[in-house]
Length: 395
Image (cartoon, rainbow, N blue to C red; front, side, top):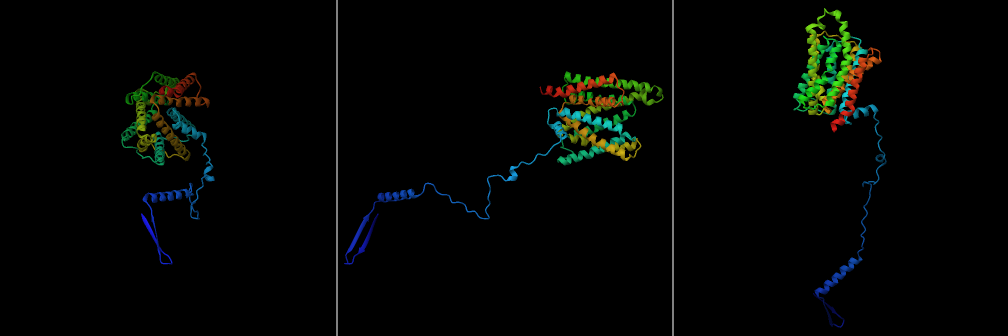
């Protein structure tokens, strides 16, 4: 590239200067200029500090004082901790729920014996308990946000459980009104044995020799307890031979009805286990039974018995027993859901042992060798099931 300059002097002579630059030289000059500009540029560029005004948001790296301080932990009572642990916090939860159910039934028995001030018909009592159970189970499911009738596929199980369960209740009420009380209770405690047999047939649960021995030991204890009571009641009723309710074919018929109640009760336990596993919520099985049993017991109250208007104390006791009955049924359903039926059923014998020991301790029952032996056999069997049952199963 060439460039020229033309200048005029005072004397009129022209002076022309011609400067020729090659491309390589100009590129070298340009490179040196660029290099010099790069040398002038500082190695560390200073970042422009952001401007802060009243509208800018300042965020401190340290957490505010309120967030650093930990919130105080809510205090939980030991009873609540034990209930939560027994419900789902232990591998023994199934057996513990069955034990809690038996203890609640035992407390119900004490309350009904010591605080009953008025004779209430059995169907009326069953109606109040089933109605209280219906209301509480409905509230329970609403609070936890579950559908009332559960999923669609286990509804047949729930309906069958309700029908069989109420049939067992109806048979037991008929039985207990027509045979001696001790015999009716002894027949009702054959329900765990029937449940274990039915579970072997329907649910294909295996019965081990130790489990059969535990059930046999517990039922032997029941025989030690109630056979003496049966012989005592038999001698007292020899003078009442004219009463056909306690002799002859009527007596045998009522005993067969009681045995039928035990069989249907055992089937009901298996259906409770199957329905509770299908719905994953034991309260649904309690609600399904109460939906059928409450109106049916109300109809039987007015059809077969005379309605008795309860006093305030009697009504309060009936409501309290209804609440306890709801809790006992929920623990029973959850225990059957978690544990094998033959192990869970063996724990149910604990109620009879606690009742006898309470009677002996309060001097309402005369102590005898047979009762003490029976209680010891039941407690040994239940303790063996409680402490060694889950470990054997896990192995």
